[in-house]
Amino acid sequence: MSDGLELLLTERALWRALTGFASAMDRRDWSALEAIIAADATADLGTGEVRGRAQIVDVMRSFLDACGPTQHLLGNFTAEISGATASTRVYVSDRHVGAGDKSALTLSTLGEYHDQWQRRDERWWLVRRVKHNHAVLGSFEVLGPGPQGWRS
Picture (tube, rainbow, N blue to C red):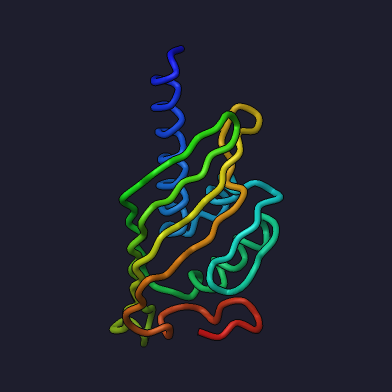
């Protein structure tokens, strides 16, 4: 396979993993999310350092399980690939709507995901995610309480 074709296929695989991650959060499909995150992954999602797949998913669930509908839209994707490792940056615009008596409230963020990936067992695994928020609009009340000890 030519280097150019291999690069395109790798970029496509990474893009599919990124969009799969966003869609899994919106569907609250936690097993689909676990299938993208490496067991030994780390993250900083704005609540401090988190280690391990289970803890990363738990942080997301602590915010999203009590929230109404969400939509995480991705764009402006770049990838740096070197053998079995890759770094991606992608813009994210996410929208959260409250549930029940909070259904008139919304929360939106504008930011970027900075991710590190490793190719293991013929597929790409997310091994590090850092979310950088550039703007936050609306009310944190639409979300669940977040992880213990976290404050918005």
